[in-house]
Image (cartoon, rainbow, N blue to C red; front, side):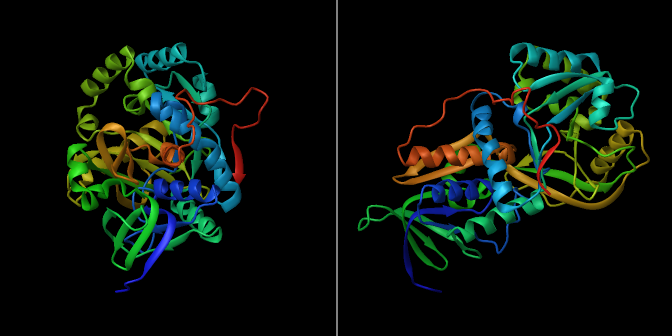
Length: 403
């Protein structure tokens, strides 16, 4: 074990999307950054997701972070060279109450949402079910491949001078009387920094157990799959459903959503029992990410029930009017779940813990990180507000920023 001590401006514990966002925000300001992660690769929530930045489905604080994150995603995709498309997302509404939720959301704030006929929905995705009534296009949403994006961002940051210390666990963080900063004790020596950011997502209880307990942070485990499906045409956007409207803040808190949720739970108690969010994204190779179910616990079991995954496959076949898809991969996703949408807490002088605690890390994580670094450095932060939609003259639908 090395006993070395290293000085830097910013120490980051955790190399997921929030930690990478902190490193990016700090490095853009010319600060020296060291990132510490206990794994030898990025393997957590930042790669076990849909790669969907669901910007248009957020409100309040989440909308502000999503708005901050969107241009950062575009910038990083350009500079790091990973695949990302500004394509929006389509919501497929299969019942009048789902249409009512979308119309209510648009009436409340028309920014970034465009109602669609059934034909227009099918222009974006080959929804085959005869129950399709229409839907909406969330214009600001982005899509990437999570299995390559985070790694590409890390490589870009390394080229720009960020130091990554992988297979290195943070043990404790204490004030350093000599430097006036923070001492991060790790399994490979100490790091002395002006500021430290803890961005370990669902593993917060491993480093800061009292904070995790007081904030009610648990783990949410997800059943997810990558499948081959015989679709009539490629998905031009990610696809959301009524089950998605029941989850995302722009829709879920509307009075119309209560009626929709009651009907969904009465009609499909089997899907409600596994807390499903039926949604789809398609990768450049044509395969689909399908998901997902939700189980919340301090320590979810590692075992996945085949019945829950079979439900997802059946629903996929019904929605697109295709034979049962062929499963290529199954995995257990995981993210931090808390009482609030976000955790941002100064736990000691110079030490800030950060987490997106509702499963919207890919949507909001870069914005959360940018805001946190700005606050730590005493900069003025962006005001809370809804996301910014492109003007009608801007070409954004289905535009690939990299390939």
